[in-house]
Length: 255
Length: 304
Image 1 (cartoon, rainbow over the protein chains, first blue to last red):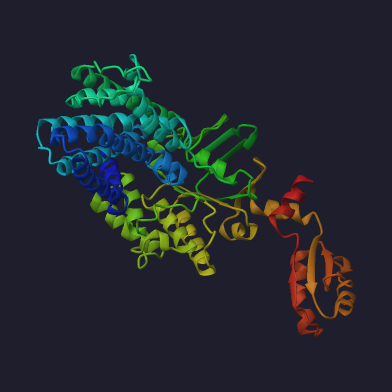
Image 2 (cartoon, helix red, strand yellow):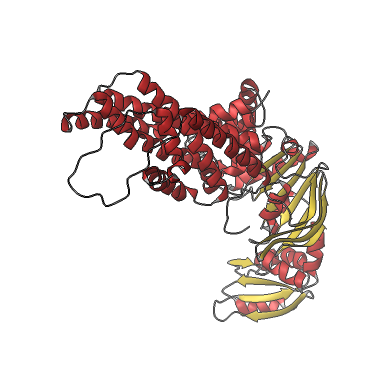
């Protein structure tokens, strides 16, 4: 019998245990409240527009944040807590170990993202329809992409959490808004293409523009799917190979 | 079983294990060395957590690094004291049993058995976070033996165990050895090791200084006079008596701390005589110790 299903389910159970997951439920509830506040302060906004705005600005950031946290738990946290030794001295092939644990992290992050999106939809009184389900597919694919990438970073760099958080909040927030085609090297741009939110009208202002306007996202949803699947596959293959060939030993003061 | 050939391991500029060659056969072998001697590094090499920089290590004829076939037949009790603290002892052992490839039913049965064997059956349902050091050592031992491995590697397993626990542990170790297991136990306490086995590997600063019977070490030690410190309120009278003994070479008064310090070539004979000082000569002896009966002194002798 393959050990992979057990590694996956046990990791998933650990990531979803109430003490660890409760914060994400609270985040989803906060999104309900935020949706209602948003509607109250922007009375001209429709439910769909409110949902789209909050989803783009917050839900997809929550996704990246959750991915940074849970992906770090796949290997990096085990090394820091020194519990990696119990995993690496069992008859479990290392590629199976890392792929099953990454899959569990991705599923957990998907749940976090979908809960946040659901909270937003409830808060903004948006219908659970096509837009919501497109978001869900983008969130699921995004969680796999972010997790695969963040696990890769954690395999290469000690204390990878900081790097992953900077990527999630700095890079992923800023790059899609930059002029030119640089937005194409951001996961968020591909997820936005898959989500295909209705265009939000820019706020009109008499003030002169001080920066070059952001580029329009021209990535086609089909191409976005392929790019994200490619990223997940490539990162996962690299992770499996790298983890199989390199040493992951907790530091100790002496022996 | 375990073949180590010219194995060295560097960590940047620091050498952890230096050109070690040795074959470990079934039975109990003790890996003896002070802190920083390279014991844990050698165990990590054998358990395939790290690779040797030069040389080779073979376990059952296979390289152990990331090799599931080796791990099926190897149990490892690490020195680290870290666990999944939110789990109970039973959950932890059961989890590792499943990772060892057992079915849910097998894992449950085997978990119950090993917890009983290590004396934790009645306390296994508490969270690991609340365990004492001794309980944690027992749980680590349980996870090392749960899949009935042929090779068992124990890194400082006696740390934190009380005297009863130590006695039980040593007795259990001999039971495992009688079943034909290959057991490698690291320790930095010679006295402990002598109670476990006669077969030793003596590491110092990464090098294998000596390997074989523990009596070899004793022979080395016996080449040099042993120092013995005696606490007594009658130092002059006791010294006068002791200096008459043929195997006592020198007696000095310790004016600063009180008592006397002597040197002898026949430690066992001297300790056999010591009780007569109180029973026949009526001297008061409040304490005695052997300042050089420790590993540091032994390494000092061996290096000389």
